[in-house]
Length: 387
Image (cartoon, rainbow, N blue to C red; front, side, top):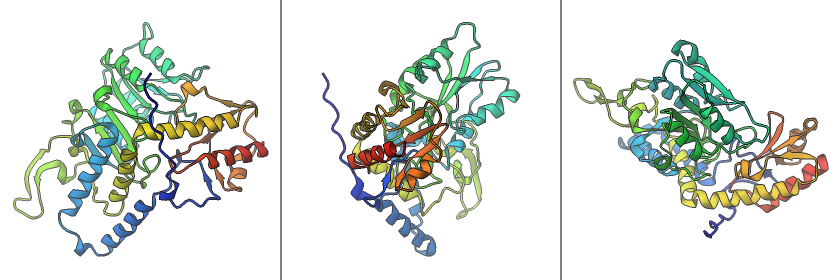
């Protein structure tokens, strides 16, 4: 029997969270660590006195962030593009992929809009169809996807554009099973790893997806407006979504001719977004990702599994509906109601400094490394009383 991974202890001391606040809403947005807040203040000062910036500073920040993002995916830094959002990354994939006419693009029912709308918009003009895989009665998203991929008589799959964790119900999608099933059909895979990067161990070398995209403002403890796109080498040589000068070999304001060489550079860097010199938030993003990598996904998963299991046990016999442990992500517990959620339940929780989110008829509870058993027990006590 393999040993259980060592569980990360609570990291609450690294955050500005008063003891009377029970914050269980990381899947919406996480608080910034104290170290990131300080980096943000320093970053504002840099922009206040830009003449103090070393000319090499911007490039160092870009590469630090690229390395930090790559570490969370077991990727090479040169396979990571600096982008602004998940939807930007999906739009980049849409420009790079040439999906076969008549093929299917698989999406998840009620998945977040970011990995979905690009393909709905492109379908008619590009001649592929969109198939929305419905949530099965069992709640097993992975089996539903595998059945859709292998359905006899169906058009070939060109792409699956899916989240690794369903944002509304916390269902875990077995990407390690989906990826080889798609490869067997020659289909592409785009993974929206918003709710898994840094928390659940992810290895793009083993999975071989075509694209993986994630932002920093949720689980990797960073700011808004910073996101990262892994691009498999087989797609990196396409035309980028934007055309900034640094995507080309030699465009410089410091020497003549200005447009010395407009051929694209190699690697995923050519797909970096325009205006990437975010002196304030780049370091903040790096700090959060570096923290997550240092703790390790296995230790984080062990901690958050313990907390969500404790939540599930505490909510037993209250009449709520919970997804089976084997089907849900270790860090998200969604609470369903047979007759609809009690009116104003999330606002009533917030009035007692207990914070979760209402998503598509469920209360989504999402602890992170700053939470502890006291938070869980308090949520359970307040929730049961309000019910």
